[in-house]
Image (cartoon, rainbow, N blue to C red):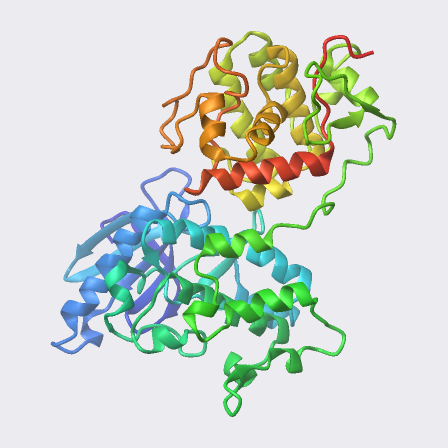
Length: 469
């Protein structure tokens, strides 16, 4: 194809065409890719135009959404010899359907992790007004390199607007997983959450078809009755799944963001690294009015970071993140470089790719040790002027009013995600202005402020003080 792509083997065949594993021969390393071929001969005259439209739509969606690290990148889209082709990133790994077949029913912990890893992807596409409409195990690949779930097959994804709530469209999707409203051709973002819920109970029970879990007589999902004897599910997860599976839209989670809020780990779920001293001290506060956030930390650890003891051994956390570059940028007052490095190390501490956005659920997962190192370095080299704990203190002082908080720290209320816009990289910036929120994903930025406040309280942070002894 185009004297560039070499097809190696067929991966699958569906209603629209075939997919192949291929190599890109124009690149020296000959990387793998996936080629999707639309077979127009499989369609009648009256459906050819619709097939072309959906195929082109998939290319457009991938081009728009492939910037997310858990959605395949679009590499090419072209026609040749009256055939249409779509080339996309090859994801090395297994689909969840293959994983289920090999390992059997999922544990509760596996479902929790899947939800926390996948719901942010749905939030991402829904914020861009796209509904996937075909969430199922076959359309999610567990990437081998980092074990993250990758959402694939946007061939029937659809743009949505408010009119879709009252207009009837075409029934598209996998019948075992789709919601009642999607069965009637009225898919909305919450329809993807319903399908995700069906997929989760299917993974927990490992029945041949998820429809076997549905009680037609009582018009409800009786998935608990089919759990393996040794596998029980907590009330907390059960309630979340039940709400995802509500037939009525008004009783279901209205958005992926709403679902993420209840998926956050409970307080105390993440403990400090075992290599940290257990000798605790209370920090000396410049402000005579103590903030609501508890701010304590092992004394030996704090001293080393604040320069009282040799710091080098503490600049690599137990997760393997090296904070030397951040320390050097801050020591030289290179505030913008330090801000960008902060984003990089936050991603590294979470096992994410560089410059991936972090969501409120990610904030809850940040290791306390790494977050403490970042915060203490910012506090030390700004003399207590910048840092996450400074921001949380201010957020508490304004009674968690995000508009007032932004006014205090000098941020625009709405985050544009435009690098450097609205950020003053200067020591003269308002207290708490840095580090900025360039790393924060989503559009409801106040949720990140609240998530960071809860995280710091859970980790028991120390406030920097130059005369700590």
